[in-house]
Length: 162
Image (cartoon, rainbow, N blue to C red):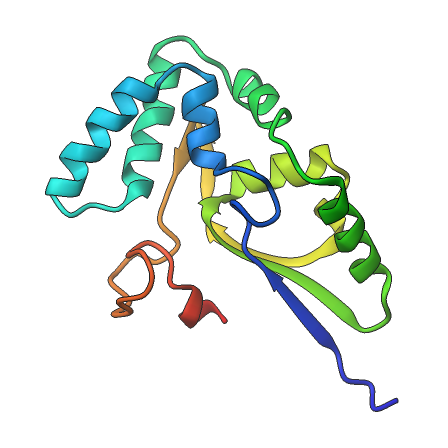
């Protein structure tokens, strides 16, 4: 064997999980009408979806929803058992690194991975950072300035990250 490491890179939404983690939280917590309205406004202003998700987290906080309630919501996201099995199998292989590059966000991805016991399978997760500030989840863009790629949203270029 030559000692070469195999790197397997996953997307997250609609790949590892069977839904979009952003819209899952919005829908499950009853903000779909407001989210749809905000997306239309932001689309006209040429903003990315990430800004609307951060705004939805602000709205949840203003309605008294806690980080714990968001966490519980994320724990209900479906993941195909075959995906879980495949990730564990790949993680067990010698010289195989698993990574995620996703336009989701750190809090959502880490919460879901921990729910399924998969967090420690990944050597790197490249995604939009998040923090908890005053009891409110804040989500920020991975790239703070335009990256110049027309294939990706302005907040995270998967091509650049690869």
